[in-house]
Amino acid sequence: MNNQQDNRWGILYCPRRDIFFPQKRWEKIEKVLQAQGVQYDKVQSENTKSVERICNMFINNGYDTIVIVGGDSALNDAVNCIMRAPNERREKIALGVIPNGVMNDFARYWGFDEDNIEETVDWLIKHRVRKVDLGNIKYTNQKGEHCHRYFLNCVNIGLVAAIMNLRRQTRRIFGSRTLSFFFSFLLMIFQRLEYKMHLKINSDVVKRRVMTVCIGSSRGYGQTPNAVPYNGMLDVSVVYHPEVTQLIEGFYLLFTGKFLNHRSVHPYRTQQVTVTEAQHAMIGVDGRLMNTPEGEFKVEIEQEVINFLIPE
Picture 1 (cartoon, rainbow, N blue to C red):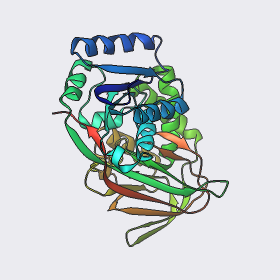
Picture 2: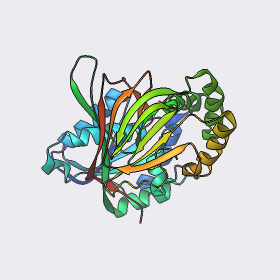
Picture 3: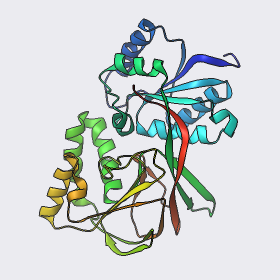
Picture 4: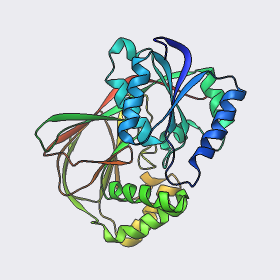
C-alpha cells in the first residue's frame, strides 16, 4: 500500500455469519464498485479483533475514505479506532458504510438500504460529509482500570441488552429480522424482568426497580426514536416494569415507532447520565454486550467528532 491514499477507498469487508454464501454478497458489491469506477483496496475481517487491526492499518497507511461493509458492531469498532488517531489525522478521515450486518440500525437511520447496493455506492461516491456525535461510556473494569467506549447508536442497560444479545444469536439462526425479534421476545420470559437501579439524569434521580434503560445518540433500535446524532444531546428512555399486557403493547409501539407513547416509558434529554447502580443488569453498546463495569459509570456525549458519509 502507498503512504498516501487520497482518492482510493479502504474497504473493510465483514462477512455475515448468518447467511450460507457470504462471498456471493461481496461479489455483488464488487460488481457495483467496478461498474461505478471506484478505486479501492479491500481487506476481509475474520473477527472483532481483526476489524480493529485492519481499520488501524487503513488509518496508518493514509486512507482518507474508510468504508465498512458490515453492521453496527463493525461501525462501533471503526469509530473507536478512528477516535484513537491524532486529531489532525482524524479530521481527514471520512467513514462510510455499506450495510451488511446482523443489525444495521445506524445505516438505516440515514436511509441506506442493504438491498440497494447501487444507490449506496452512488451516495458514497458523492462524498457528502456530515460530522456526527459519539456517545462515550466511561467506566472502571474488573482490574480497576479506567476505560471508555464510544458508540454511534446507544447504550442499553437491563432487559433490552439481554434481548439484543438474544436477537443477534437468533438472527444468525433465522436470518429474518422479524423472526429473530419474535423468538427473542419468546425467550425473554426466561430473563430477569427488572433490576435495581440508581441513575442521575439532569436534576432527576431515579432510584427504584427498572426494566430497561436506553441512552441513545441515535434511534437506539427504536427506543429513543427522537434522538439525532448531531445535536450534542443524548436521549434517554427509562422503562419501569409494566404489566404483561402493557409489555406486549410496548413491543407493538416499538415496532411502529411510537415507543415513547407507552405509559411505562419515561423520556429525558441530557448531556450526561450517571449510573451509580445497575444491579445484575447486562449492558450493551451498539447491540454488543460489554463486560459489566465495576461500580459507578457515566455516559456522555461528544459533539460532531466523526466525519460520516451520508446520502444526498
